Length: 387
Ligand code: DHB
Image (cartoon, rainbow, N blue to C red; front, side, top):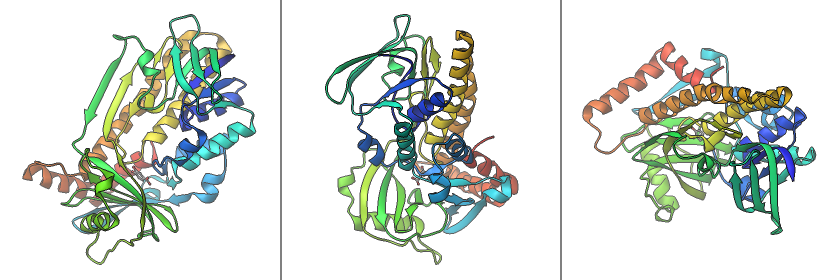
């Protein structure tokens, strides 16, 4: 098979790119080792920046995000037992939408199917070769048939364990990496909402996040050890931990039976260049952020927006040098999001062995961010997404 753009990874980044390219008359083949069902049921973050929502709606993916998603005009930072609201609309005139990444995927997958897009889920033995004139992707399709796709361009949108990233020759790549001494324990619960907006809570027992999914199902997280095992936590133990970190001064979480639970890895990672020859990386294949602030999906969609422009120009003008502009344009936002995710993380989490000085400094930081209009606007602008 020949196509203009081969895309590895059918998550939101790969599918959104395929969708935008098809609207520009450029064809693509998308492959993913996961089945459509697997991608649609893997819990991910739930917050979309205003710009991500506009991209979904304006490019004709779906209106479901505005019809069924929840607009959030602010978030709560909770510390020392008190809630402090950051009012996005008042501060920067923007909002975010609570609309789970799995729903974004479902909308994109449905749109690609309706438009006759070539998306191969559930493939095996995917390999990429960028050593020839044109990139090649080989794989066994869901029926076990060997397939070879030759393309003008190859896009790696295949997540943090990207095989495309590894196709870049050694010595070409620079990587920046940061680990954190904790992780998140995430779970779903059948319970009513505890609060109309998200609560990011700092406590002496560690961080907790109260988020939502539907009127009867909630999503919550609490800081844990990176080696934590989900089997060690039954419902009672989870709620006891959440209560210690969030309840107090008249505020109480509304509890219910706990469903799916996972321990989320926590790291910051950036690789450059994002383009080498005819290979381009997008989303988690090129960078990973810790989950605090929910930037991962938003950043992937921002990459794809730039990538779509660059690829369209490449085919229109037949010039390879336009591909050079991709990395610099994308990395500017990538590093801003890296800083924001790192900053939110360190401001709200507690690390073992942290000095008394750092604890007091952290408290002062929270009081500056919530007590000053300028401090709050800094958070609001970053959270809703830089223009
Ligand atoms: C959610 C996840 C996040 O990492 C975050 O910062 C906010 C919300 C969520 O899953 O709802």
